Image (cartoon, rainbow, N blue to C red; front, side):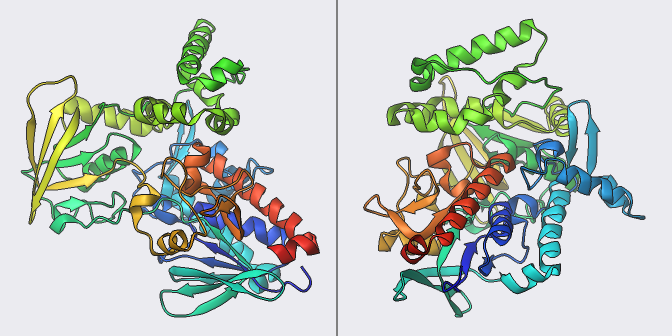
Length: 472
């Protein structure tokens, strides 16, 4: 990248940003800034937890940071066994008939080690700079040779960069905490602090975030009950031993219609069952084509999926690790975890008290619940509602725009951010959960790591071409 010395800024150092920065380091001779507003690099919200009861919901065999080195994470786990006195790590590894599942804390240690190893090498020490601060603004500037940006940090420092990769992961809700009784951040480490043992806790949502919360409260000694309230009351399914199942060769009508696709999947599941193969194998077989199917759907079919089928898909696609599934089943049997289905009508909080009114699914009179705390775990906050300072400024300038469903940012197939006009914004890319409205299946490690490779290869091609580099 001779004559183009300015760095690329990667904004967000959870899994998405960390792996993107490492792949850029491998492919570009430029410097990189890895910017993170939290104190924990390479962890993000997902892997910042230290609780041993928070397990990955993907098998360890599928969690390598490098697609071309599929055993990289498993090999790293084995290396822990060679370290004396690392009994804490052993307690976070669960070998089951369905595969090996480990704690999210342990996976966070793995990601941190990747950054530490890169910085220990001369190339990383010289070309990867860790920036522990929040990026508040990216202001376009004309550098004479092409467009660049002035990056402004919360602490007041500024950097001139050639471009930026938006990889902030799941943005937090901009809602207030409601005086302590309403908790908008389901990943807070203090959820179990100072609880009254005689009053219930209500969790909004019944997905994997709710599962984490229930496990955290149970492990803390809170006697319950924990009441999970969602529109359909669907708990995530558990992982089982699977066998390879061929990816369905979908007909055109099945690629264009949600109804026809679901009919095909039911037929595939029935065929698999007749051959002694679990339905989970059929769902997993869709991973290679899921993003393509989503993008192929007309907008109306995408909206139908989000409105009607999404909870069912999430419950079957995003599954619990077997030890967690067994524990949750036990908590439900004991009455510790109560799962209810209904439409929320109202939430009122006052001090450390909350009252939730909901109408049960299927009809009936409204039900009122009194609780000491309401924890919102209904899924990722749409970017339009997150009130993130940087994204807000980029939207205002027209450098980015929301996707058609307002879930995240709109991008081209090669991950270039699209501006208000619909044209790609030079030197600006986005990946991971921020672009879930465009690709849908892009929030898990196996999907994100492919995006980071795609991005790194794209940037390498760009900066290897002097004409494209100036345009960047």
